[in-house]
Length: 309
Length: 309
Image 1: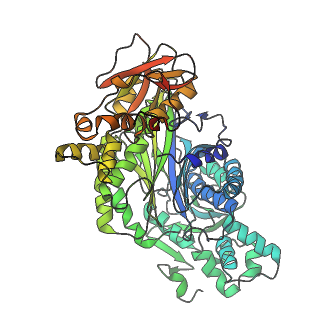
Image 2: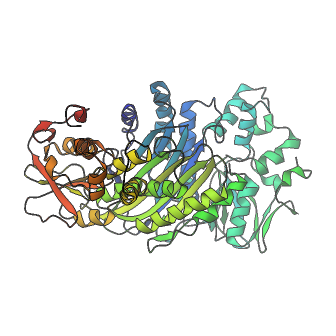
Image 3: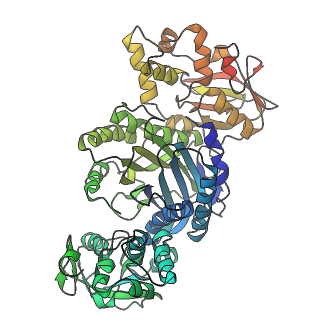
């Protein structure tokens, strides 16, 4: 059932679809992507819902940017080269001004994540955005959550806790005296960067990888379980941004570092002999066993409430 | 941001993912699909929203079945062999009974459309379902909306108007004296069949194709425009089911046949010399020109209000 007034919307979405891999973009029953002989296809889908995944007063460009990047981050975690995305959006009514703003963020993210938009569906309804991303890796070269082996180095890209601190700033739970620090941290929440290039570069070296969406401990736990290993984290090595250290009280930092989600950095394991990629930090070690510990103490649900906050 | 109680839901979705093409299903950052050397990938996404695409009292299995089939129908219209689907669902709260019912319909559709479910995202929010489907065709062999040439036969699969009549029955606008007719017609609306096998078989013969989701005239108009041709329809040849003829007054039939959507039959064009596939009907002819006419009269917006209803 097409909504005629929504047809107009397609014009907004039809100019981000160019790439060598896109044989046919928006406008037929399906888009056509040129896949690579000897490679395999990676697919992931993510939904953002108003009030759950973004604040009701969130700017339209940031909603779009974040929707694409959270999905693209799953490709990064697989080591996949981005190929294309499709977007499904339901919105209460066709609001040209809002959609134009939404599309500026969508266009930025499409370029930054190298994900041409090849299809979409626009329907009337509550504001819900679903992005499905597709990428490719050479067969047998992808990064899985499984594969970490005892002795491997546990590593993370970028800095941790920034996005959670940014969200706390937006919600008034933290205050930044320096506006530049506030801008940096809120941008880390509103405009996360999927570590696409890093993921691709880790394809041949990392033994396991996951993106940090739910928080370091939560996502480490997924990786440990899938790999059948224990992960030991040394909290002193956790990478912190200057802005983070300026805004978050030292006594609260560990809580943000371990439990703050939404950073979309990559957590990965490297064989002992492999050099650390630029911009990454070794934060611990893979050991035989199970579970995740920090400074020798087991972590679990509610870890941060037991004296570390 | 994971909702812990929603993690349970994944168990419902994790047993429909098997196929030779699925290298990795639900459970990592992305699913992995084995694509075929020399083939190209087709992708389409469709969203169903409560109150817009299905009635609020629609049974959960039917919602799931319809969501998959409407998306799968786009693959059929491209002539694509189905490979996999991902499902994003937002729902107000995790309701095990509803989800179990939803999954029975999902499982049926997954089997019927040959679309293993390889990934999903479940979030809290208003009931919105987005299905993204992927399929493959040999490079250069897909069915597009463009390609119809003057002289081609205009053909349609199955029968028309059934789904619209079924919806009218559900909404009390039509009455069926024979319950078997009511059951047939409402099932045509609630449980449409994507013409996957037919689409695949037309890959080498049809010059253009589209699925009929918005109604014969609306979708014929898309095909005519994309192909740069005129389409002439002979209303006497439009295929009607026995149930349709029994339930819909003769004076109203043309309205349902021309404007009723949701049948998800294929509309396609065949070279004059090509035999009509079984279960299909020739309903007209491709001519030089533009637009769609029925019985020699041009059709346009509101065609059915001008004396044909």
